[in-house]
Length: 303
Ligand SMILES: C[S@@+](CC[C@H](N)C(=O)[O-])C[C@H]1O[C@@H](n2cnc3c(N)ncnc32)[C@H](O)[C@@H]1O
Image 1 (cartoon, protein in one colour):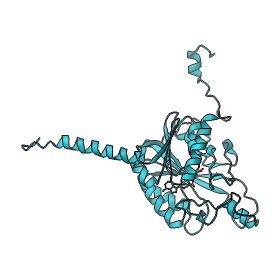
Image 2 (cartoon, helix red, strand yellow):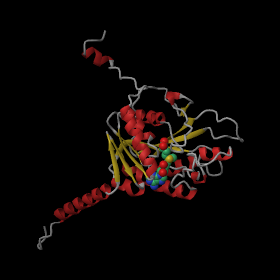
Image 3 (tube, helix red, strand yellow):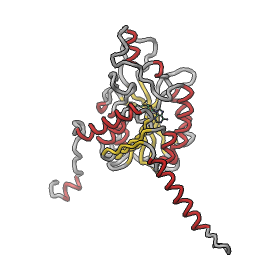
Image 4 (cartoon, helix red, strand yellow):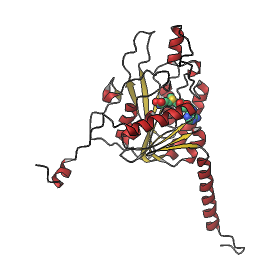
């Protein structure tokens, strides 16, 4: 304390408490849905992420910059077939899906990752495949590596695409990057996890969206695969570009906590609905965990 009664330690504690309270108030000003162990926020992740605490894992699927604003797959299909466009097939634009908007958003998002990830954790970020002079997976890998350690590009082989022109886009990628300074957790004893997800592996199948669905849905099984590899039950998974909530459904099915952010109210509502349904429906694919041998012997059931 100085002669005039100024106490630096006390002052900084008060400033800190005030900053925390201001952040909490700001967070509370966003629309929020609490469903079981899931918290969903409606808003721009550029405003929300700075207010959120660090998590154990991020699985996300940002806009790819493919300009879905020009009409999504179903819309274009109906248009090509000359069908009326008022039967639930109105275009469903994806926010921030222009090339420049996406580039800026991704740059900003990747820079947040070191603060958002706890030590020993990682981010799995869906990304396009394909080529051209500036392939997206190459650019995003270099960009994420500025902030985390880029670990692996996993190829998701979506299987045959049917008829088309030249090199059809039959795969997407998932970029895995870990917080600098520590290898990310790896919770499997299997030595056969590949960096290619082959068609149908673990029930991971591409989804052709219906008119009521999000226009670019990921199968929840894709997120479940990575959630199982990198987290344990009870840990927290974040998806800042939640869309129709596939990552949230995956987290629920794997018994993880979930925090999701979505800008578009329509997809926010869809996420909430799907997450409620996920809690309501027992999962046919979850196999009850078998006790390990040492646990069995403790129970007197081994030998
Ligand atoms: C590719 S989609 C995610 C689809 C999702 N994986 C699913 O399976 O439904 C990307 C989502 O990010 C949302 N988005 C775009 N910019 C955003 C922002 N700044 N903050 C939060 N969400 C945003 C879009 O509205 C869109 O729903």
